[in-house]
Figure 1 (cartoon, rainbow, N blue to C red):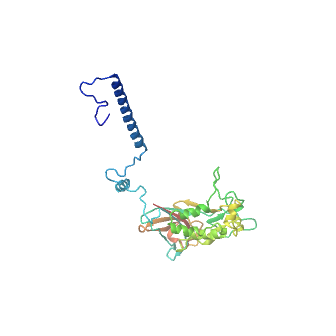
Figure 2: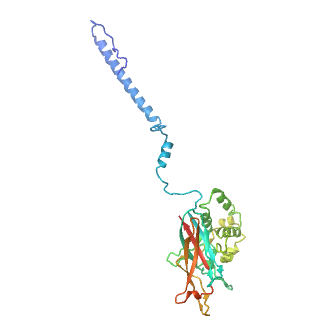
Figure 3: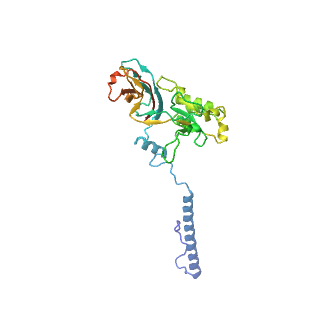
Length: 325
């Protein structure tokens, strides 16, 4: 429809309406309609191709809306900077207090989680090592570095479940190192990664891993390195570069341990002041939250059918403690 509102063919009073003028008027009407429709179609095409995102909605940018809405709801994870969500400790409780009767010294763990975490205490069992021919063990081991499941490592043949699928005990060294890094800061992670380069020998990797797992501290915090046994398969490859082991398909070795979640820990043997020896001393490890940053593990001993005040000697307890929030 024309916006000028003028006649297609102007006529004065008394003019004849001729067939030629009538036909010309119809042509002009059709041309006007065609042009108007064409302009509308062009406007629609331009609108479809133009961006439809508005800079603001109700006077606010998208980020301003996000910030405003986020203030209404708590974070689903409720995470806090510098607070670790999970920690694991290996403890060897062996220091005997000169009390009457003697007792293992309680262990204090400074976790710095800024809250009261859930605590699980595991007893670390002796691993069923079978010595090679002509050799024997003079002690039990709680940890073993062994070859990968596909390796021919005769000393590690018993490190698997008794179920039909025979899942192997332990974790690949790569997985253990990854677990140590997951909640570290970028700087801490970089410093730890520097200790595990493919150009290092297997012996260097294991030494650095032992240092990270059994960080020196109070006596009850860490295990004596003598509690970690390396199978002959691992010893034979101690001087090999890790990259060489990867290239020849002998990677990764396993870090094996056997934790059992129980309330009762077998500690014995022990002696009583009446001269009678018992083969088992049982204890309950009680957990106390000292505050939101520290817990205490206290062993309480008993022997069924005996006066527990008569206990005059104890051994040691090997534990794994998990903390999580």
